[in-house]
Each structure stands twice: as C-alpha cells, then as structure tokens.
Image 1 (cartoon, rainbow, N blue to C red):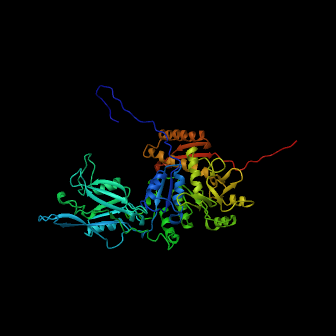
Image 2 (cartoon, rainbow, N blue to C red):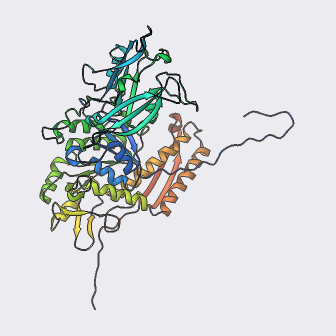
Image 3 (tube, one colour):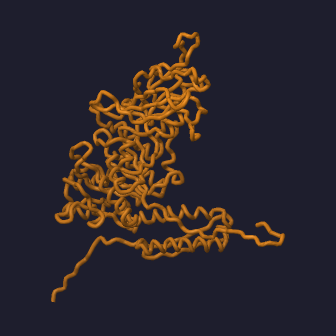
Length: 547
C-alpha cells in the first residue's frame, strides 16, 4: 500500500466482510420437442406462460412428454433450462427479397425497390442465408427464431412510417386456423439504414430491432442496401398485402402417420443432452451444456425417452459431477417386466440418478384426452414443490411430500414380494394406497452398493454443498496460502454448514483447512469436511407388549 508522508489524516476502506452466499437449490434442465421456439439452443424458461409462448402447447403424439414434464416443474418453480431439439435436416421458413431499380414515376430517375424471390433450395443453417447475401442471391431475408413447419404460419408486411423519414413499419402476422385473415402479433418501426436512431438514441436498423424485441422474426440485410439514398427507397412495393414465410419443415422428425419418428430423433435428443447438437444460427455445438462454469443446473429430467437418451443423461450428470438425473424405467406393464428392464436395459450403477416406476393415466387438458404419462411427470412436481416449501435436502417421497394428483389409473399395482424386489433394485414406485392416494414411495438412487449415497435426499444435499462451496471459495483463488486465509475459509464454511445443521440438513460436521509443505509447493489449499446428512425414516417398527 502507499505510504502517506504529508501531514494529514488518511482513511483506507478494506472489505473483510466475506460470507458464503447460498445458491438456488433447484435449477432444472430438460431437452424436448415442441411445435416452435428457438431450436438446438439452451434457454432459461421462467414459468408456464413463458413455456407456452415460446414453445407452443404440448401434444404427446407429436412432441413426446418432455413439454409436460417441463410444465409440471414450471408450475412450481420458475428456473428451468430448456432446449427444443430439431433434426439436422429441419429447415427455416424464409421470405427472400432482392434489390432492384425501376422508374416508378417516369421522371427518368430510378427508384430502389425490393422484389420477392424464391430461394433455390431449402435452408437449414443461418450460414446459408449469409452466403445468399454475399453471393448476391438476395438482399433482405426474413427468417424465424427457429426452424420447423409452424413458422410457415407467419407473414410480413412493410409500410412507410409516418413519424420518421426513410423508415418503415414492419407488421408480423400469424395465420389462425379457420380464419381467413391472419392476426397481427407484432409491429415495429425500423429502417434499412444501419446508423439510423430513434429519438431515444436506440438503433432503428431492422436487424437490431428484430433481434432485440421480436419473439418471432429476424432479418439479414446485405451491405448493398445500406448505402442507398433513403429518398429513393420504395421498399413497401412488394407488400401490397402481407407476404408469407415459406419453406419451413420439421425434417425427419415425423413418420408417415405424423407421429414422432423415434428411430431418427432419439439420436438428436441424446446428442442434445451431451452438448453435441448444432445451433443452426451459429453452426456451433452446444458445449455449454456439459460445462458447469457456463450453465449451472442441479437436476436433469428424462421424459419417457428411449434408453440411448437416458444413457446420455447419465453421462451428462457424471461428467459435470454437480447434478442429479430423474429417469423413468420405461413403460412396463407389470412388476416383473420392470425388474427385468432395470437389471438388463437400465442397469445403471450411479448415485447421481434415480429410476421411477410406473406409468400413470392422467387427463391432458391440451389435447382433451387421457394419456399414459411417465412417472417423472409427477416426480418433477413433487421435487419442485418440496424445494419451494422446504429445501432440496428434504425427501420428496411419502404421504407428506410425495403425493401425486390427477391420476386416473396406474399400469400395475405393486404387491407382495415385488415390494422388496423394487427396494433391492433401487426402483422408486408410485404406490396406490386405499387411504392416502397415489404417492411416490421410494427415495433411492441407482447405486447398488450399500451406503448413504443410496438415498436421493442425501445426494441432493451433498451436491448442493459442493456447488455452494465451489462457487464461493473461488474468491480465495490467488490469495496468500497461509494460516490467515485458512482461518477465514474455515470460519465461513463452518457458518454455512452450521446454518444447514440448524435447518435439519446435517446431523454433525467438522471442517479442516490446511496446506502442508507439498501443498504449498503446488499452490494448493485443502478443505476437508466430515459430515453426516440427516437420514430419513423408511421402517417404523412397532412392538406391542401385552400384560
């Protein structure tokens, strides 16, 4: 620090008030199919209305059950990372315009106009649109935020703006079923001049306005448009009416009957869970999914997906080391089949995942019919509700926190000796009680080795502690590796764990922070924590002694 030598009083403020900042207990992640929305890109979805507005409504035959699991979770908690998955051969719906000149008013001076053109081929990547502009195949291309046939419902109309010179109003319409006239869904004032600003200083360039404000449409404009003199623009001419976007397809997503083609799309879904899908806008893979420093989430959801997808979910959790997977065991018709599937097909041995049985029949308000739904549908809601009302280390099984609403029927009832077999196989069933209703009746991870890590709530608690300490102790990187720093770390970790103990998460704990001579040579500090997460009652033994 600087030494002050001139006579006077000098004050230095130093911040020694560090404390361990708690983190959200639950942040979810799910990959799914949907009718619309940004595709092959991770997005934070904050609630049911956000889910519907962004991805449309669910339909299990066309889009699977991922959307429904997301809806269950978002009905309670508002922090779910979602990724809409599309196959690589899905295409953009586009409206392509080409710059031209014509003497509109017969004054011997040509005006600048746009003409509607049809692209020579379908467009699967944004890079193809960029190439069209570079190669002079088009000068303005409107395209949606995602690929797929739904976006063929959109259309665009441009009219001169009355409030600004050399500006236009762009109206975006959506076709409505059984209605002849499309509905206006968005409207913006824009310019084709890259430097034009509105009265508040915000850019009016059409690319920037749509990128920032539109939920549906984007635009790419070639450099040949920008330098043109604004008083010669007559870009409204092709828009005597609204012009539709066209060419959007879902690729190989569906079979001949209009249902999900699982043989094809399961590979796309599996790749999405391990960051191998290609973002069509950037051409890059979604590697941020597998990096905890890029995306922080604590739980990952299956949704009745094929086994190869479940395998990749397990890979994701084990490679990140900071999250837990909720999986179903497939749709099995009886207990013996479920046990066979567990031992042969889903023979996972990990404490970072749990398997649930069985499928249940629930009413789907979006399709107006009863459907057989994955048990993860109920798990997502019970987990989220327990995290909201209690904490992530509370078990979300049993009659107090594991009840499932809206079940009309179950695939089978778990009776007799199958109960013990499910416990030994780490299969968490939904039990149908004569009194008490339908209830998640298991708290077991997929680990067969007897230990405390066979309990879901124990693992969730440990992973939470891991995330919080890793997040907070980063602030001590490049601090001096001496007893003073060690004491600050120990004091703050003790306070954090003491708070968890007061909230019934831990029975006991002890903390050691040190660096031996070798640690100091390699610039390492060790934090060793012994602890016991509070266990949960599974068996109550009653002894009646009559005298």
